Length: 174
Image (cartoon, rainbow, N blue to C red; front, side):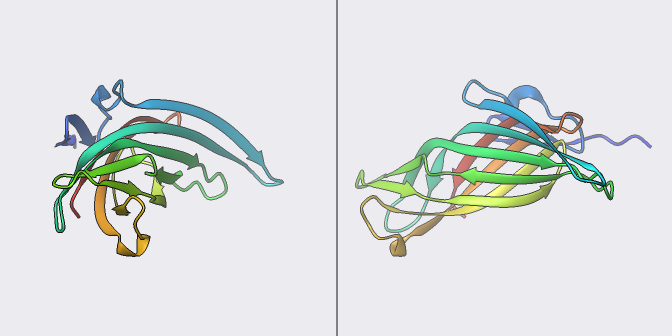
């Protein structure tokens, strides 16, 4: 039985679920670098392929006391680890650092900072949509007064080479 991939649009990027990742995710705004390491024990060899990407993100969080427009670059690191002992699907240890993303209040022009870093474990798939929430607060203000925003990252992997091949992101209200 032949199945057709599920398509959806995220921002200006086309994502294919259950199929092959389309190339529009790799843009001039995304920089990707890769390295591979191998660890050998007495019983097996585990491969870890590390890929990182600087992903340009932007969007707005709507809410009181004011709407906040965000832009900047998120650092996305994908460490894909194989499991030679049990033959399980490779795991992606995904780290997302949004500390280089900043916001500007729509009505006051006040600067807002993001200090979020997330680490997630995911199963390796050709396409992955990752959604995380992040705290943000006025620059110079107290982190205790933080509000919450949401970031979505559309990631593409080459499942044969275990490499992150594309990434795009956007910010919105949770």
